[in-house]
Structures are given as structure tokens and as C-alpha cells.
Amino acid sequence: MSFLPVTASAPGKLMLFGEHAVVYGSPCIVTAVDRRIEATVAMNATETVVVEREGHSAQNLGSVQYVQTESIDCFDTKYQFVIMALKTFWEDTQSAFGVIITTRSQFTDKEGLGSSSAVTVALMKALSEATDQGYDLDTVFRLSYATVKAVQGEDASGFDVAAATYGGTFRYQKDKKNASLQRETANMSLIVAYSGIKAKTTEYVAKVKRFKKKEPDLVNNIMEDIEKLVNQAEQAFLRQDFETAGHLMNCNHDLLHSLGVSTDVLDCLIDTCKLNGAYGAKLSGAGGGDCIISLAHPKCKKNVEDGIYKIKRFKHIKVLPVQSGAEGVRIE
Ligand code: PMV
Image (cartoon, rainbow, N blue to C red; front, side, top):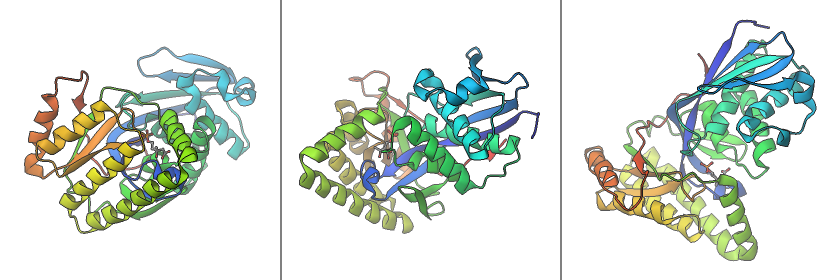
């Protein structure tokens, strides 16, 4: 066990194709982005658990025994993923120890870039390193996904945990990373814009679930169509045919719209991208807000970004300069 602080970092994510359908077992395509979250672990001889988020004062969350036995609901929501990751790690290693955990983020939890999964994965890796567990990536993924499900509920597909763990761009199906598309998508020109609205993933997953219960045939057909698009998008990426991938984004967005998860601001952003010459665009994630993504010819990227900045109807819209295909979890 190391008494020197150990730091690990993990990337955020974007869903390229297949959100919502992935909850019901279909594949999706996901990418890790070059905005990271760091977690530092330092063993604490006082047998307490202290969590410090950069820019905020340190919080003593109580004795090891208290943290171990209390339900996750007793803790402030901003610490729940950290506490649950620690509890999952203690359980897996049959141990419990005092620890000071410090987190630092290159993105806010408002943009929908996967801060919860990134902090969970970074912390799991740092804990493994600090205690010489030597977890491999599949173990980091398994325990981090269990953590996220314990906080967010069983519906979470784990695509964000997979992106934070493995990095790159790849096809994902609930519980497992599939074929990598990292090499083929290295040159894609992706534009990401934040809608200015923080969406609550669980709310939109529940909304689709209710719709599916009410109209099973209709929603199952939509999910099947989304799955077909994911397969076609994978083929387009393999050919590095970003124009077709962009068109498929438009189709994917239309299906998400018919699931009832798009909004005026998301539709406005998407129309703006298309009007300014993008191949296509779609919302990314559960819907209701967060980000849109767009594919364009590299020469057209600036035009699309300028168009987004000219939108006056909605405040707080901004282009996020992020790169896709970022490296997965690593020790710093
Ligand atoms: O809202 P986000 O960015 O966390 O994405 C949610 C994607 C869903 O498919 C709707 C849910 C999931 O767990 O895959």
C-alpha cells in the first residue's frame, strides 16, 4: 500500500449514435473526449474519509465505519459517485481504510460530457494503484459500472463508463466494448455545441421507458431503426465516409425526436449546423439539453461554428472545442 498520493485521470465522452436503444440491448457508437477528470488518493491514518473537489473546501464525510455502513442516499449528491466507488472498492478487496480523495475536472458536470463516469473510473484506478491491486481495464470497467448502476439505477447502459475506461472511439453494447473505430475516425471533423441546458439523464430514460410501455410496437420499431442506423454508421466510419455518417446522424436525430427527447434549442442547433453546410447533426446523450454533435467537411467546420455563435434566440449556447478518440483511464 502506498502512502504517497496516487493520481489517475479518465476522459469524458460523447454518444455518436444509438442512445436510448442501447439501454434495451442494442449497440451504440461512443467516443472518449479530451476533457479529463483527475482523482487523487492519499491514505489517511485518522480512519476518516475526506473528499475535496478542487475549488471547494475539504469535506470530512465521517469515519470509515460510517461511510461503509450508511446508505448512499445519506450523502450529498455531489459525493455519491465517489463514495459509492469507494464502497465498491472496499467490498471487492474486503478492506476499508481512511482516505483523502481529491478530484479536479477539466469540464463542468453541466455539459453532459460524463463527469460522473469519468470521476468513478479515475478513482477506481487510483484506488487500485494506491493499494497495489493491479486491476486490469476490464476490472476497472466492471467495478465502475457496478458503482454507476448503484447510484443511477440498473437502466444505465455503461457506455460512458466504457469510454472513460478504454478511451478511443468504439462500438459498445450493454456490458461490453466491441470493435474499435479509433483509426478510422481519427480524421473526422466533429463539432460539439452545448445547448446551455443541463439535462437529467434518468428523467429522459424514464420518459422513453413510459412511452415504450404505452406504445410498445411503435417504440420497438424506432429502437430497431436506431440499431440499423448504428450498423450503417459503423460501416460508414470503416470506409471513413463522414458524409454518409453525417446523413445518418440526421436520421438518428429524427428518430430521437420521435421518441420525444429533443427540444427547441437542440433542434435549432441542429438546423443551424445543417444550414451552414454540415453533413449532419444530432443530439448526443439522453436529450432534453446537454450537447449536440455535427459532422462537417473540415473546410466547413468554421462556418458551422460561426453559425452556432450567431444564434440569438437561445442564451448560453457555446461551441465546445473537444477532440474525439481520447486516451482512456491512466495513472498521472
Ligand atoms: O445523457 P447521457 O449523456 O448520460 O447519455 C444517456 C444515454 C442513454 O442511452 C439515454 C442512457 C444510457 O445509459 O445509455
